[in-house]
Length: 121
Image (tube, rainbow, N blue to C red):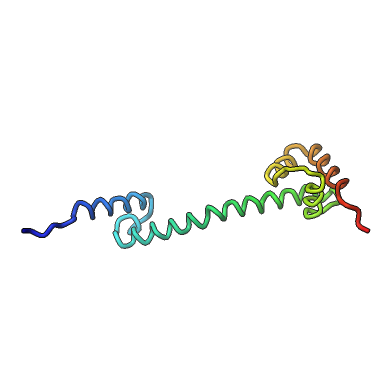
C-alpha cells in the first residue's frame, strides 16, 4: 500500500500563512521560513500594541488636561482629586475634549473641583 502524503493539507496550511503575510516586502512575503517568522513577530507586536495604544491615548488626554489647567491655578492631581470629591464622573477623554472645544464649561468644572477639595489644615 502506498504511503499517504499530506501534500494538499500542507499546501493549504502554508497558504493561510502566506495570506497573512500579504503586503510584506521581499522574502517576508515569498519565502516560507521568512513568512512564518514575520507573521509570528507581527502577531506579537499587534498583541503588545493593542495595549500600548490605550496607554498612549490616556497619556495624551492627561497632557491636554494639564495644559488646560495651567492658567487655572490648580495642578492635574489636585484637579482629579477635586472631581472625585465633587462626584463628577467624567473620564479623561471627555475632559480633554471639553477643555479643547468648550473652555468655559471646562472652567466651570475646574471651579466645582476646586470648591470640593478639602481645605488643608
